[in-house]
Length: 154
Picture 1 (cartoon, rainbow, N blue to C red):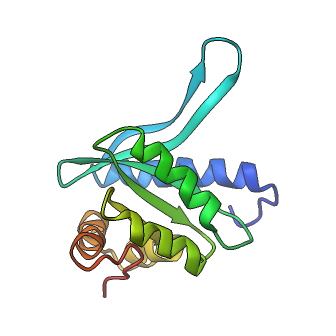
Picture 2 (cartoon, rainbow, N blue to C red):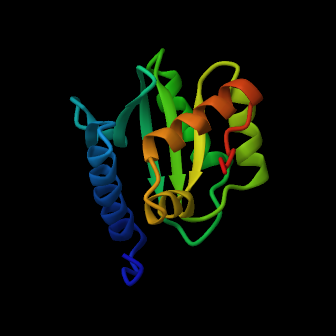
């Protein structure tokens, strides 16, 4: 995937790979999908995947950009989560998250559970034959208890 220059194609390839990883770890509920408007306006939402952890559904957003993820990107994902009532969120990025993006997610934790993950974290867990499900659960606990959406478990 590193050789793919087009960010959209690279992102689609990332979705596919991560959904397979989630499926192998028995946490995938649904692969990427879109919701369309019936009156011809087109796609209103695109969800990169849905996983189940701790008996909760998490909408997954994945980005492989060459720039940091900002407030706009995380806010868009937060709106998707808020609009579903009891859903939670995971945002995975190959690039870092800006401090304001982390702050907005931290502030949102009083209303919705969201965790932020750098792609490098997933790579490290898999490279060390770690348990991805356990790793994600530790991130969820840190977000819930300590209000740390970007906690990196050791």
